Image (tube, rainbow, N blue to C red; front, side, top):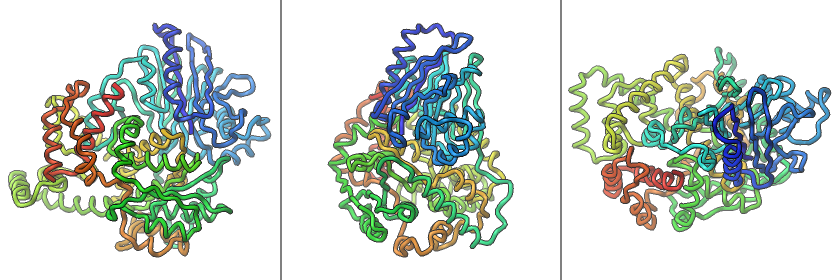
Length: 631
């Protein structure tokens, strides 16, 4: 993939020299995303608008100079800088060939011509992952758009008549156009959920363009609109057999489109259903064996190499394993955290496996991300409905009695993350979406009380979070329980944690990761299917498994699910302890307005005494390291 950036000056008081210097620093900070080529252009608009538009290129399709960006149309009235893979670009090129004489074989030119033909409606025609910027001289406007799922990132800043955008938030910090200030909402969301939500960012002046949205900036300001929604008003009235056939046909189409590349492609293989399904889909559509990569551990509790090796042998892949030790992690810890665009409790695993893929000579790797969200693979699909039922029973009891239940549970059972959440549920008034958020939470409200240094600030953020939750619940009230959880897993967890980490950690090594199971046509299909056939007791992801009948080995379908996680619980009590402890026990001036050092020390003590999981102190360690590096 690539890095895109730009600064639109709308008659600001900032000097042109300062804007140009900031733009160059912005682009320099994106070099790791696109080490193959760099391009920049200055464009003078009307009514005092001036645009600096830039691009750092990772060459995947048509790596020749003909694919150089920013790219212009014939009369240079329209310019584009894009971070994208348009999987149906060949079909679109065929559709447009009578209108234009194409000068390259790149999907960028097809995207440019699509905008030239359909304008903003080009978004209805393209299929892929993208974040792009188009300068439209005839209409004197800058058009930004992000793909439907949010696979590719796009951040923007708008202040004092300066509009800036970039593929990464850290690059905007590097531009020094403005001084970075922490966003209280971003801090709250990070501590509450281990990631920053998509409506805000960790900084108060920078926002993330949401998935499925586009933005128009001109001399009057900026406007943002939503262009895609995955939901259908009616469900498919077909037999389960017919529906499975639809999914099978869609998966085959998706696989064929996602292997289009002018460079070598590999796949991540854990040996779970999703990655095995991915390898099955790709192997069926490629004439030669694909390269697969797996992470292995000495600790058998976390190691899945037995299954990944069996799958690799079954499909005849060129398989390579990365044995990851505690010392490997320690050696890569600092560069991995420095690669985080925003603080996150996840992503180190992706950093390590992406590094291995790049060392194998790969520029593109495929991931099975999305299978759990679409095909109901997470345990949230079974736990959240049970918690809902429990909450309905608890609601029959007076609040004072429920508090006594909570106190009794605390006294009888050892302290743990689960007990903390259970007590929160017993004492609270929650509906379905609230229970989901409790399920996915990192620190509960009571714990946040000891972490936040300003009680009034925390109270305000809790109130805002509750309002956002209610708005989200109201907007999806027509969905079934299964579809609600699927939607929340996609928007709340996958988009803001998994996809964000996948992009930044892979691009740190100049590696493009594609996610075939998140093709928007497949997502639309899955949300059109009646939810009662999406789950089956004792059968994981029945629709995905049945659509690949006779292709997935039985030992994969029947095995117990394991997540792609590192053994932090063990490592943080071993060789990593000294590093983690040193950082956590040292007060941070940059976070002092938000985080209580006493609360940090209490969290670390709780972990050492096995009263909370590793993710809580780890999240605080990452936040401190990120702040020290970027602020």
